[in-house]
Amino acid sequence: MDKNIIKDKEFMMEAIKEAKKSLEEGGLPIGSVLVKNGEIISRGHNKLIQNNSVILHGEMDAIENAGRLNGEEYKQITLYTTLSPCPMCSGAIILYHIKRVVIGENSTLMGAENLLKENDVELRCLNMKEPRELLNQYIKDNPKHWREELEKVGSTTSLK
Image (cartoon, rainbow, N blue to C red; front, side, top):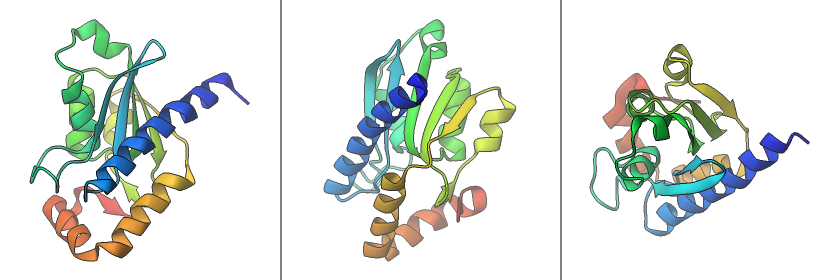
């Protein structure tokens, strides 16, 4: 197996830990980590429900938790996220020139991957089972919360 795929899966398991942390807090099971030079420099998870926030998606939380980095540092980062990034998170990825994004799975929820590709962001989707199962279980257990979140973003994010 490709050494990069093994590393990507290891870091994705850390993002999944963040997704589970969000779930334990009563939130959406979406997690993210930022990796620079083979080391995790930041972690984050979805806090929309927990913090009554409109912007703390897993990716945004991880970017915020990294603090203010310089432009060159952002270019060296890989962002790992359990689900496909929405347009807001994709915009932040583009704004900060994060050049690589690894997605746990995108079969349940498709974000703005085309926007990322159009802006020369390298994408890799691992199609992992665990992030999909976490989201599907959340949707099953919390259909009202899930519908409310989808209504907020309208048609910009699509559930498959």
